[in-house]
Image (tube, rainbow, N blue to C red; front, side):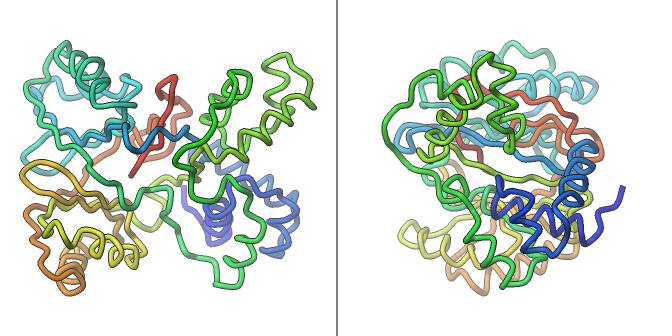
Length: 341
């Protein structure tokens, strides 16, 4: 399938204001609300775009691990499937590099990664070796990435319509009762799920669920995002750079990187290198262009290695088809955390 400008514009709307009403979106785009609703249903049904939400963990405790996997070539498919079935493994990618697979793993604590996730790696037949780098600071995540097909006036108008769920997630706050947390799995599968949808499934009154939903959204405990099938986004290439940046310049580097419109991730890490950058690009030739821009704009950066992703089996908990569309299956932890790229 191909995504037209009208499709990309709608996806951009939902990146900025994930739960905007169709009537408000219609005002911004100048398109009838029923047309937008039908267009979104078509995109969502085809797996071309989807909305999701994830619970934020304590940023001082949570563990974001980037794991390289080596496996037997003939068992790569089985290893990939087994890794994708682990809820804490939020992203699984096949790499064109000296590692076979790249994982993003999110756990509430480092101990949870060590005691719960690592033992599962050791049980997977065909998985030969793993190497782990730990994120010491997440500067920018995929939730902030935008298609940028709307003009500035439209983007400004959408910011006014965006609810509290579209803002930066809170880093702490009061715990909510289980009755409120029960709504999170619905929002993981559909970030635009309505109180009426959830009330029917839970056997509760719509008014009660609406109050619970309002409180959950106001808490800013959730990170919302609208994702798009990468193959049809106009940015079909993922490149990840492992770099060294002088420790005292990490914040300045992160600030400069926010000016790259195709940035999906920037983070400080442990390991042989201390900084990781992920971008979505138009073509392979853009890898060199990006590297030149990085060296020009970030003094002292040493780009040690670049890795191009060949395929993605799972992104932010969503299982993907070979063409990068969403399969509809979502495998995430019971106690979800905010994902990254």
